[in-house]
Length: 166
Image 1 (cartoon, helix red, strand yellow):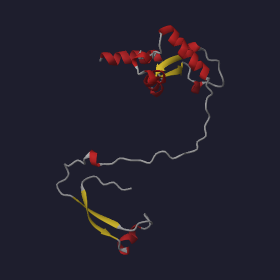
Image 2: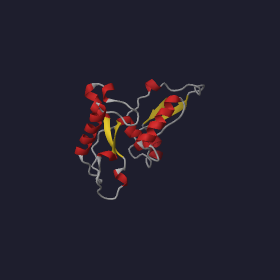
Image 3: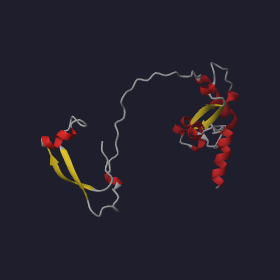
Image 4: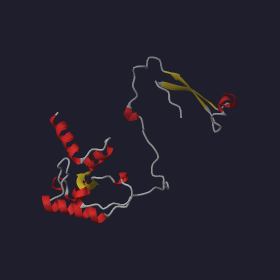
């Protein structure tokens, strides 16, 4: 794939074997050569992004093998129930978003359970208690896992409050 910066126009297409021959080592599948010339005075013209089609092939199946830490779904359900019993609804323990603020069919799906001690850093199986977990909205959960070093829900809460003030 070649990329040329600037504005060019095609001036010739050749299927001549003598034109193609010098490029066959690089592109043995070449069947023609395009000749371009730069359009004079077009240095200040930017391409129109609406005319540029950005695309990629997705959806291919790929077999991957990796280790997965075992998690118990019952702990997630129990933690959600604990928060609902205490607050009347699910609430993010960092930003304060509640499931009541979201459409009924999306509320519960927007909350995730986060482990205080990250399972990726433990050596072997450990006992997890409900107090070892937090309920977070999906956005806060992602921000915590993307931060380096990884923030706690309380530290993220402080950072969110600071950005709201500024």
